[in-house]
Amino acid sequence: MAAKRLNQKDRYRCLTRDLGWEPSYQTREDIFPYERFEGIKITDWDKWEDPFRLTMDAYWKYQAEKEKKLYAIFDAFSQNNGHTNISDARYVNALKLFLSGVTPLEYQAYQGFARVGRHFGGTGARVACQMQAIDELRHVQTQIHAMSHYNKHFNGLHDFAHMHDRVWFLSVPKSFFEDARTAGPFEFLTAISFSFEYVLTNLLFVPFMSGAAYNGDMATVTFGFSAQSDEARHMTLGLEVIKFLLEQHEDNVPIIQRWIDKWFWRGYRLLTLVGMMMDYMLPNKVMSWAEAWEVYFEQAGGALFKDLERYGIRPPKYVEQANIGKEHISHQAWSIFYQYSQATNFHTWMPTDEELDWLSAKYPDSFDKIYRPRFEHWRALQEKGERFYNPTLPMLCQICQIPLSFTEPDDPNTLSHRSAEYEGERYHFCSDGCCDIFQYEPVKYVQAWLPVHQILQGNCGGADVESVVRDYYNIHSGQDNFEYQDSPEHRRWQQWHPNGKGAAHAPMADHAPQDTDTPRKAG
Amino acid sequence: MNSLVYIAFQDNDNARYIVEAIAQDNPHAEIQHQPAMIRVQAPGRLEIHRATVEEKLGRAWDVQEMLIDVITLGGNVEEEDDSFVLHWN
Image 1 (tube, chains in turn red, green):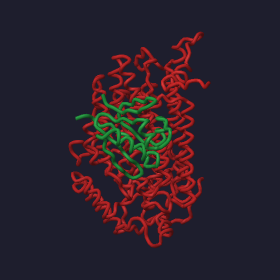
Image 2 (spheres, helix red, strand yellow; image 1 turned 90 degrees about the vertical axis):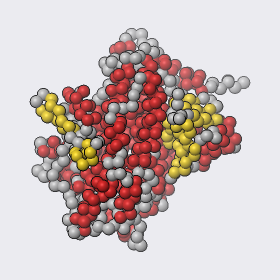
Image 3 (cartoon, chains in turn cyan, green; image 1 turned 45 degrees about the vertical axis):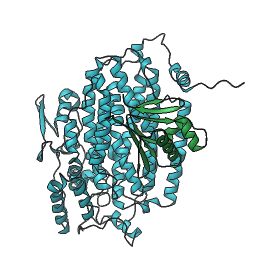
């Protein structure tokens, strides 16, 4: 007679909790040395609930199925020259930013979860972190595979890991994750599982990936949604972690609140890049950044923080500034990248007439008043053959590392700039949120590797920006960078589509860098 | 007003039946079709029942299979052998 099948709860207990044991010849304190220094008090690890109760055997089975589906689509995409069917070659620039800015974060997430999984005393927590570490490694691999097809036909994708470690704007995502990974294990989980995965990554993976589908990029939407299917589990873990820590001891509440305040603001600043991708880099648009913020932060986050109220948790500090910022940050970020395109591995451009009208409609309170005149001015310069590039180096925020170009929450015409002194040196910040983070842990943040400082100190080779970009960043000048209009990539796209596909641009640059049309192989 | 819980699926052949089952069991749910995805939201609570999904799919279905097609969700999760529930307290 066949043995009775265990139900899910029993299966989970046997295949997860029962993997733990009580140590006999070492103390728990010696085995898990990082469990106490952050001040978090755990009284009973057995209270840890994993709502998905996923066991390792089921995990492998479902992950294998996801992979099979995904790689079948990658094959179909490349066999059918899917890259020629996207809406417009401008779209690929969002992928360049993704590959060099986001994919290495997946790798950092893998490293982070593998480490904290080792350092928790509870078996349930260890298994959940182990699965997530494997998930994150899968995301790195699938993203590299998906994008390797684009690398055969487009510029700027050839050396993403090298660029992630060096290029000025990539220090924004890089430093974010390094900040989390150099914190203690409980802060790491609050930062990544809760604040980032639960509260904010929807904004990256849901509307942006839906946008990839809308722009004909079957490969990206598929890896995006495949990754996101793991994310549903990660998000649930994030919420359970917070509830677990808050229920364990009341002394945990103020510690968690401070981490939520800090990591909400860090994540919000990081997502500025995603806002810009959605509003400016998707030729066919699904929703604006402001709309995505309303659905996935204001609405979903509102429900979440209402639920956490009973633990004594309030919404993150400065949330009202972030809600005001939704009208501005994507336009301010695009302005930064447009003027520093000489130093990026992707192209920028001014929006077409139709796109300007879309932005006006989506941002009625800010776009026509502030940003449209600026963009029309830049378009006029471009038409005269004087496409604007900023020859100076920007001043960076010591915390988020974004150039100081955000405005005051109550005055969109005034630059937001804070500063603080520490041991005789003055440090600069983009906002109250970033300044607060510094002041709580100055010893950590005085060590920040700020790309502009490093260039000026001579640590990035080269006596000028051009040689830093070429030799230190490995960006091929004239191919990977500068204006999109009349770039080698733009001309190649026109050869593929002699009857026109993609945007008809108003402004034409007459001095865009001229270079070979041959696509470059990975170096 | 109750806070919204939500779940989004890839728009594929499996998920279409799951969404049909959700719609039947949760008359208060709102279903939104977006490029490549289907989002279901409801005030307070959403329930997915294995029996209804199996009826729609015409085959045996494990609740954990759903993870293959889910893109995101919001709310406290309660997963059992026969159901998957999202709710806010």
